Amino acid sequence: MLDKDCLFCKIIRGEIPSAKVYEDEKMLVFKDIEPKAKVHLLAIPKNHFKLLSEMDEDRAEDLKYILKKIPQIAKENGLENGYRLIINQGDDAGQTVFHLHVHILGGEVLGW
Ligand code: AMP
Ligand code: ZN
Image (cartoon, rainbow, N blue to C red):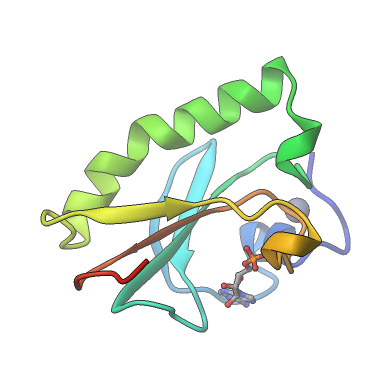
């Protein structure tokens, strides 16, 4: 289910270090290396999955699992005051890593 060359699959396998804040059998959450807000986390499924446009039933289950967990993880990371979730899809959105990830941004008042 993991891709040999994918950066985030390498993080899941522990081949590239990351600042993990949550992990279970289905998902991993770690700090973004170039934070765009005071708190910037990335939540990823442990199944390799390139693009939101590849959505199917199994991938929807993975994404649902992540979305259900995020409120608890956000709270544990000091985001009681609110946060923003972003999924970049494709070139126009500036997607650079092709393993589905949900950005969790907060820790300050966010501009749009
Ligand atoms: P996107 O532009 O939506 O594809 O987001 C990819 C994100 O991954 C960017 O915000 C990068 O800063 C982040 N990123 C890239 N490499 C790493 C890494 N090794 N550890 C943590 N975050 C990373
Ligand atoms: Zn991957």
